[in-house]
Image (cartoon, rainbow, N blue to C red; front, side):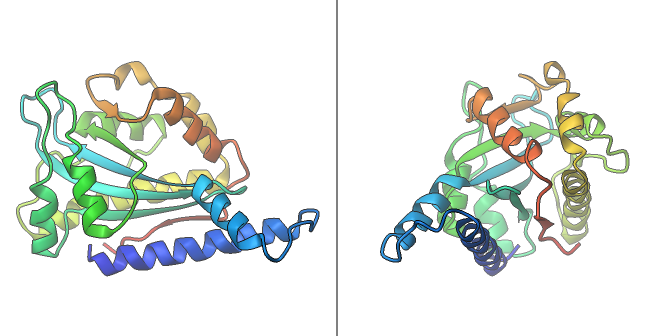
Length: 235
């Protein structure tokens, strides 16, 4: 994905977030003064928007897992929330692809190195608030828990554009299904049925605390259905 697409996504997302904030402000008691409104708006947006990096490897049980893909999810915790999924890797831009691929590494303790998060933040000029890593088995288990039967996780790293298309198309379909469930109000029930014991620690890890992870998801699935949940991918 070209950097310009992510920038456009951030602009659209920020515009929707600002619109949501303004509408919420107008529906309030109207006590905000003109001089304090910009500062209050900036504070509210900073406190409410979170960007999460979603990373998939082939098999986390292997000594050197292979990097398969990375997406970023932009979440604005308004009520209703607003969510955008954007693909970062693999990219059809070879220079961007190589730069991101070169930053993927695991530590000696089997954890994802912070290099990938840092590279993406630097390359795309976006703040990353947390990273979630899973593998093919983990992604398939999550899809099963959410009742998504038509998606199977890729476990082979892309070698050409056809491979990239197949990987991105699979995840595009997966996230579109998640958005559909969120908009229909079905995601909470599916999330409650997740078998975490089958994921942690062998197929799922994050630099977020488990409490942060659950609280972040709860803020999405327990509120009104999202007014915006989009997958900015055209495979």
